[in-house]
Length: 316
Image (tube, rainbow, N blue to C red):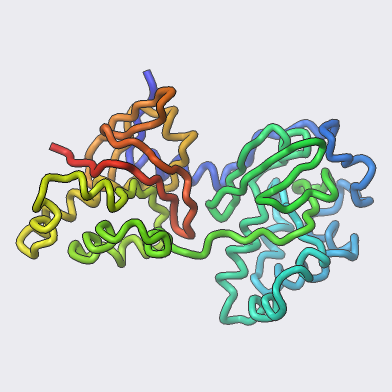
């Protein structure tokens, strides 16, 4: 029997993914990334920060770490895996971007970008090529692809791999990774296909909640999904006298924490913020929750992840 995921246990799981070190990986690099030929010269006794400084090609990264007070973190015990953009990678950003990010007013935004380059544990090149994604310490995931001896992280190419340090490992990138900066609500607004859901959030006064820190997993019915409800249902739900009923319905489309598609399929059911237990069904046709099919999965947001569903979930 597959496990059940409650809101409480999901929060614990999400925290473990972000904070707990990954299993220590082998240090070989026989994976096509040519790590042994292009790795920086470094002593395994040097920490991540000192190793990067000694290399001389990470001055911009060092300045960004200093501006966000993350130097002490990456000099800590770890271990951490750092996907480190070179100075040339930072230089590829649009003109003025870096200068703007380094301003004190943008400290939170810069911190989120830097944390998007760090994964818990020692993840060597031999392990990276076996992954399709990796959860960063910031919570969001990066996509991993390995083809024809070339490894890319969110499209950025790994140009040097397996720089071993006393508290982790560095893989050098040729581009800066940029996490999603929008909340789940802002992502829905930008998509343009969730007008009814957004109107419902306003009627239930829940927009502010889903713009908060989270993280949340939102099972988002599209406009077409709402259109499948019996005639007059939506109009009735958004009336002030039915606000409590609407809040309950919407809360049953939200799960605490970030739950990605590959985690959902391993579960028997998930518990929503409204207390409902949604049955999970996985088959060759796809994944469904309480009968609602997941039409599109793993849409990242700053404060969570969205799975688009084709039917509004109505819990009896």
